[in-house]
Amino acid sequence: MCIRDRYYSVRDNIGLNAQPGLLSFVHSDPSNVWVPLPESVPRKADDAVAFVQNQKPIGSDQISSSGIHDVTGRPVLAIKDTPWCNGVAFAVNPDTGLTGSTNKGRHELDSALQRLSGSGTPALPGWPPLDGGYAVDKSAGRGGSSAIRLETSRNAPRAGAGQRVMVDQTEPKPLELRGFVKTKPLKSSLDDQCVISVTLVDSDGQSRTERVQVAWEKDDYAQVAQTFESAKPITRATVKLLLRDESGATAWFDDLFLGAAGTEVNLLQDGQMEAEPVEAGGMSGVYVENTSGWGTTVNYNSAHFTQAGLPLVYDNHTQKIGILNMFSTYEYLRALADPLRKDDKLICLLYTSDAADDPPCVDLGGRRIINKKTHNNTTPSSHFHSRLTTSTPL
Image 1 (cartoon, helix red, strand yellow):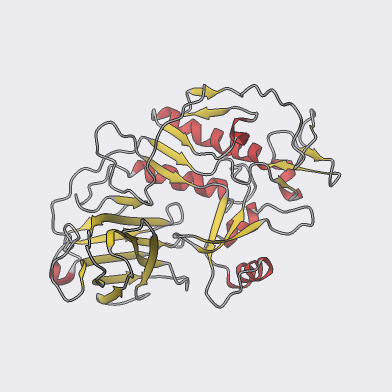
Image 2 (cartoon, helix red, strand yellow):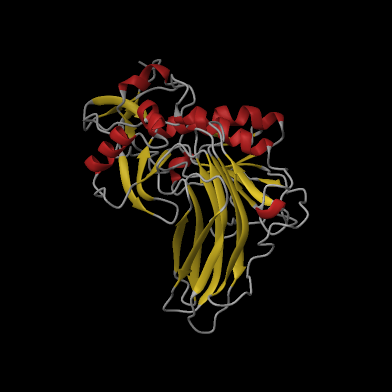
């Protein structure tokens, strides 16, 4: 059985958890490790690999243990410039059974389950939680007021809060963002470790995302401020408070303002974070993104072969064996389904091609099986394997 439905992405629509008739899911991207690159680093594969090897950014240990290799032994990657990451996406094997405590599959599984367990934490009505969510700190704000506190750990390396507002400009006018942030201790030097992300959508439907960096470590609150110009009227804006640090870090946000420059009309609901927290809508399960991404890629990293739970594939073009990465994605989904089944949670899959319907079948929510489609065209793909081995993995 294949279930298809309409969905909204949290990148453009946030705070939908509590609306009747909607199911909300925590996000999981087990097949990629996203690494932001400084502007000084050329957007070339060799330079991206050198940056990761030399600078050891967040996720470098996962790339080392779980990275997919091409037939020459080089990492498989894609240079990307997206609203959430301007840098590089490394393809990784999401199998949770790989050796080492830092493998991507195990890290992603632990993170998803931790975020599910905290999805009912009380939140401010105007600030829906993102990623690992946040806490309302009643006395940690400026002058003893309330503040939003983001906290990360190794099992939950991302935390956040967000809010979308209608701007509805009739003519272009500068927008101003300002607020106060305190952080400690930030152990990484990544530019986007702790940011206020602002996505602006103009009257033509074009969007752009600006990232306002905050101070790395302060004994007291530091003010942040930025003005945004646009050639077209702005219709809406999405503000996200984001923290990412797998070593563990804390950030507090208070007295945030977004509005027309030179005015005091705050478009943000509860910018002072003083509203009474309410029980956040519980999550229905895990949304696994990009299940077909890198799916037809053959992983030639021989260090992964002995941990493969499914047969290796043989590539006639290269005359070498490897792991079809869709099989590794299945292993991740199987590991994820076991604990979700016990809590009556669902797995929501996003895929972009029929590759996600190839064998083996996918456990949906730990209860139903999506059966393999019957295809009239039985010609094997010219891109990868021409036959599957039928013996145990090598």
